Amino acid sequence: MKKIILFVLCLAALCLGIWYLLARPTEEAIDTTLPGYRFSQSGQGNPCTVKIQGTYVRYRFSPEKDQFYQGYEGGIWLDGEILPQIYVCFPDAERDWIQGTGRDSQGGTVEFVAYRELKPMVLCTTLEEETVLAVFPADSQEEAISILENLPENTADRFPLPEEIH
Image 1: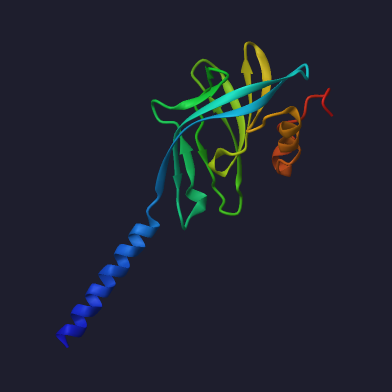
Image 2: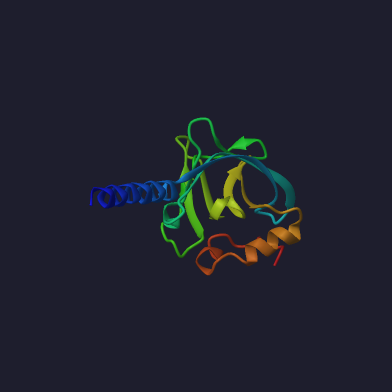
């Protein structure tokens, strides 16, 4: 009888340990630079780059808890200029796209739409006193337009294509 109780306790402890290890979030340090394409208000497009540094936290059984945060040292840089802090989390397990706005203390803003793991990503911000729309990863104007055209319906109105491109 004692052996059976000991066996059941060991089995329960083993199951709890496995459950704990599987349920723990995994953190992935992100330090990447992606090629992209940016459009200005005038419709002119130029290749650009985005550098992303931070931590992506992935929950195996609760994808609605997935999140990206920049931390103190990280950030998002568009063509070498750091953008306002953004915090990305996916509040709905059924939704792989998220949109939001980041603000800094100087009044700068960045609107974003991102797919899980930040690929692809669309940013709308002000650089050098001009509003720009940047799309990543995209090696050409055609790839950038394709990503913009395939954004979910609820985000497409937020990031309209420049008039000269339609």
